[in-house]
Image (tube, rainbow, N blue to C red; front, side, top):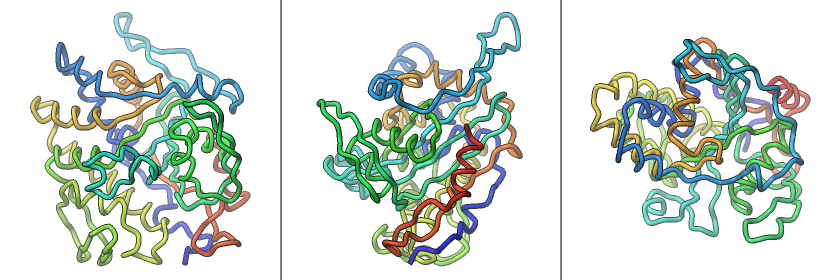
Length: 351
């Protein structure tokens, strides 16, 4: 049974360490740090790893309005001007690749790909405050008609799960559905797949997570006693995906675990100081970029580095994570719908 009107720990605003925004669900931090050190072949190789989708061309102008762009700023006459306007980034963790590595980790095949994790990352104008909003995958929404790469479009679907948008129409439909649900323009799109997430954790040497209760989930193959654990990549991925072994078995409990993992990743990155270990830095960056898909506005290391530099003023006490307010769906006790007017008020605050 899904809890009605409860968000638990996942729904409360929680301060994050500096750079949390860069790693929400996809560990952008590893890529951004890389930009200062990579050169020559390594830079070209990693730059070529990144896959991209031209979402702006696919969706055209029938979208929410863009935020007003603030003038660029620069710390010195020699530095490249940095953007300071607000941004909204749709971040997805997916089982989309359908390759051998992803299937071994529980990913879907090419006909059953879905976005397992969805977050809207909002950066305020001035880029010194940010909010990360998790959207439960089990949220029932109206999925709009979406253009398909092969031509034609998908049909409008009512009372369908939010994560089905990716399944039927890929990143373009995921963005269009997110914009339809929120009324917020998604300026960028970032996606990392199952094997990429697990590989990142292993490249970092594992992460340390503390759980407040036993986890016993045969479906995600995760069995942990309550307490502090050092997890490898497969275990960390299982923690990000588990829900049947905790709480009421809903997606809401899983969101809380995913937020624990975000903090654990950041703690690990800070602890090992990637800039002092070029070999490890390269392994981390190669793992992440090989599993990264972005919109065409973020499909290069130079653009990712520019984004990272523009976030230098973002301190830990100015970043919070919340969950979209939801209640149990009247039509299905195992699904949720947006809780109004709280959900609309939240999205309005991010425009």
